[in-house]
Image 1 (cartoon, rainbow, N blue to C red):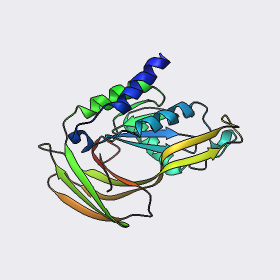
Image 2: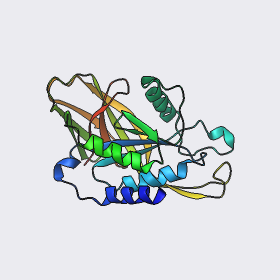
Image 3: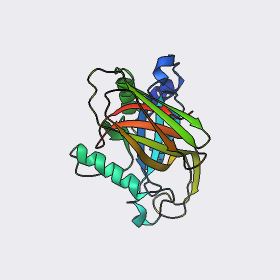
Image 4: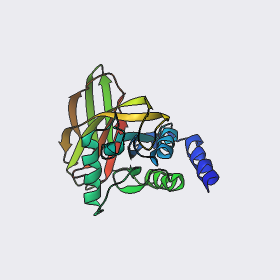
Length: 233
């Protein structure tokens, strides 16, 4: 089963893409922790998926495992709150790591490669509802949105996320003691820069907090589905 999962994941990374597939990348959020012994395989899976042009892969380190002997240096309480909000919307009574959320809608155990492949392909096959572009000029960002689907119902939150492509950690205590681990696309900042009603074209400007890469996510208000996403270029 593990070899099949690895083969499917490798296939997903290697498949050529039509140009249109990159217009609205599938957003994969991984809730992870340096203090979780089950997380490294999910972190590795996110690294492989992050190579896809049609996937925006983000690692959100949570803080609720810090008490078991190792404080995650990349954790942010805001990430825990976001994960709890997803659980509330889905009527789940618990949160856990590693957990992946795909396009704000579907959740899965973060190391399940076959299920992740299926979800990404399923979301890629759905018709676009909106388009967003993000044009970067130094630290200034111009975000433009337009609806594609008829009767698109808002409101939608416009999220600006900056992330570090690679961070490393030498862990000396806790469940992963003695391990040197690499983490990709670690979320450094996450802000809501506007709200869109979805009825027509919309533009908003934002200021980036630094030189790190950035993405813009358009999500139904209240932690609903993602309707558009783009890298800032």
